[in-house]
Length: 138
Image (cartoon, rainbow, N blue to C red; front, side, top):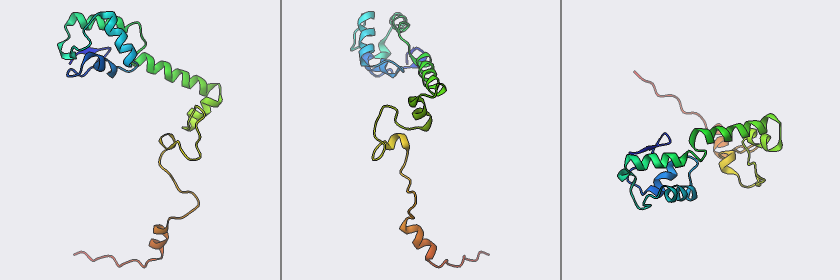
């Protein structure tokens, strides 16, 4: 399993798809790296030589990937929160940032649906039902 940019890329996949396991590398950049290093795109990751891995690593140094990219993104979000911008307040509240509606959608961002103000029928029925006596244990 080759290790590139601190990530063990899957060795059974073709290089174009294996490079996309690195955070910040998508199809376009993976294709650019393969073209720049002149490696066969159909080659499996397990078949890479150490020279080819070093060439890929050198080509990746031009891009912000993994820890640097994650740190940059979190710094940008924290800056928005610190200056109390609208986008920063949306990030802090865990709501959609880019103008999406929240009245009927945004379940992935807001979490599971919670009923407020109404009591579920099962809860009312359970309250009204007489409780059975606990079984005695010896």
